[in-house]
Length: 367
Image (cartoon, rainbow, N blue to C red; front, side):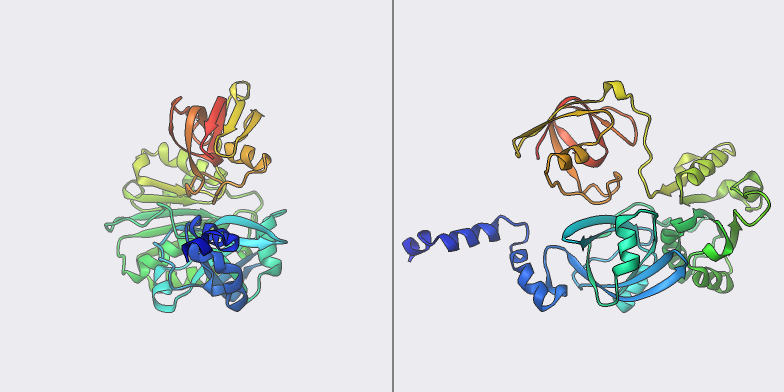
């Protein structure tokens, strides 16, 4: 019997396909997907069960993940994967609901704004329909509620309200009694995302104060200023959370810094990676992807993930912003600069994130 199996090329091929996979059952995904997309194993499938229009350019997608999904904490993100014209795309979005929705109803929400020129967000708005299945990663992120009750200040801009909605509804459900203030900046009142939920929270939660600032409705634009912070009682004792465009977050950080708010009491999350000013003249070099036996000459401020993709390699990635660590890889030699911090690595072996690591001279990567 053993000799028959050894001589059977088809079975040998099948064995390799099964056992070279992280999850051997994923080999059968094409068959399972044709029966029921919720059965696939390569990723956690999630079915769209409802779509809610929030504003003219923002929709909430209600998803029902497969039961094996592990849940999330308020304020966390997830990676999603979607096939568009035969190409798989991964993107990171904040969950916009309370974990109780998942625990009680088995559903979660992603509230997504259409981005001009955005490949994935535009496809989701135009093509994603009820009944469609997409891939859902496990939740991650440290933009979390405090463990002990203390006064809080949230500052959000535009679609930066999404993780804040998750946090606020969770705090309200837990009967959080310390003062909580939200300063929410939008272009016009018609651009308030989650309006019904925010106004309902203000009505039923005595600890919550909501201020919506429509930046473009006055004679001059209304940006975050000291006058807004002056209206927050006991500001110096508040733990502060920011989420929104980088300009708003930088301004909020500067204003609070000048008021003596300790940086350890400030928490933020972002949509696009803030980049340190890197010296282009010192960047680039010969990059060797060791396991793939591929060498590339790179120049300028280009991350290793982009270099690998340009060389027709397909490394694993998620957020592409240095948040999720899905693209972490072992550097065996050479120096890289972290695009977020501007700091150089050591010259030896260590784990790096491909999406935010820029070579500085020759680099070898275990990929």
